[in-house]
Length: 371
Length: 263
Image (tube, rainbow over all chains, first blue to last red; front, side):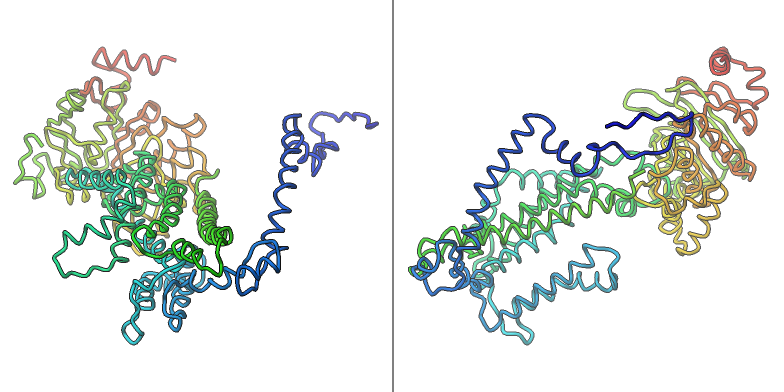
């Protein structure tokens, strides 16, 4: 620090780097980890906790874990950690449920096609986006054909659906159909037409006032009373409808929040141009309102996806139901940690993916507003 | 709808005062609930006429011009724009809105669209103009308001004055017969007021029919064919600018002018 302060004539001061300790790693450490004694203490405590938690977890999940074994006792002999051999043994039923083994390629195929169908929806600037979007629109029909069979494929009943595949079917269908329905409901609630408005309000308030489980019970039992005797109305289809209606009520409220944030001037500018109602909604209002609503919409979707496990209550065996029944197997008794950690991981991957995508989308759409 | 005759409103109303009238407002009243905002407004605007409307805040001047393109609904009297009477008929409202451009105090550009897309949206969706043609027209008008180089930026990246000039260009792209200006410079810094006023002056020189609510008296003097003074929801006085500023007739007008020009 023997540097002598140097003076420059006015207007000729050159740009200089900040002094040592005010830049780079040292600065980051000081401002983020050791800025005050409380902060320093918290850093030390955090490091200690990590030291206590991470190594044992790593031992259990990876280092001492057993990947291949015939039953629980063999597992225990081979290692003290997690018995992933159990998951290995049960993997296909956890994923496909009771879907006939010879036809499981159809589930794989529809999942791969789902990923392909999502690309043009989720990202602009991909090659062949326009034909891609057409494919995305017809995808539900293709997936329905692949999963249910018929027209040349061996028919598979929905009672054979199960596991992660069932969660994904319910979740993806709910998400895909509740967004447009929710937007319509939100617009209906904002409408000046009294009948449209009161219908939307009643529907939304009813849905939000009733637990999803109740609706699922209604779907599984009570609908039979209302439908003419002898009608067979697929249970999975009823669940799909209920889940979609349920989350559309929530989406509607989230989107309404976005709609209310749009300044009146935007509507007036659109009106004064002579745009019709649907044009001004589609071109001006909704693009802005949906952008604001992204965090809330994705939040609802994540909730919906996790709620798909509730179908367990009305007797559909989703991944959680199959996991639970696997625990009863005498050969693998008592390995609940392994099962629940795996199921948690499955949900986490999907939900975390949605969350990251929403952040990406927010950043992308922010461009128009930055100065 | 008050006294407006439904049968009559379906057909264009033949103007008794001659074909030169682009806007006719006859005995128009408006209420907000019980509050009588506009009282017996009578106004005729000829093709190519430039009219400046001034008055204290709350005098109803903005409300009056917003009635002309049905952003506000009037409850009594008639408004006839380009031979079409304003009624609840959505088709007629849309037909009028296509011909009437409006520039707002707060610009109201669409923040999620680029400047160019802001300008082409109306022509493409309302007038069904092909995209390439709409873009060419938009660039032409953006050049006229002197910001063609900003075409691919977003409104949030422009200054207030630039945004307001984009808003003017956006309205002009619809090729309107009438332009309404609702205090276009009130939200701007002094330096930016001039660039917007210059744009409006050059627009006036093209012979556009203009109704401007503004406090810019210099603009009124140089451009206006007529100045209208409103107070308390009524038109108090209307005259040519020289007469209006040099020899105001009503005490209320004199007071207003002395306050606005006095410093």
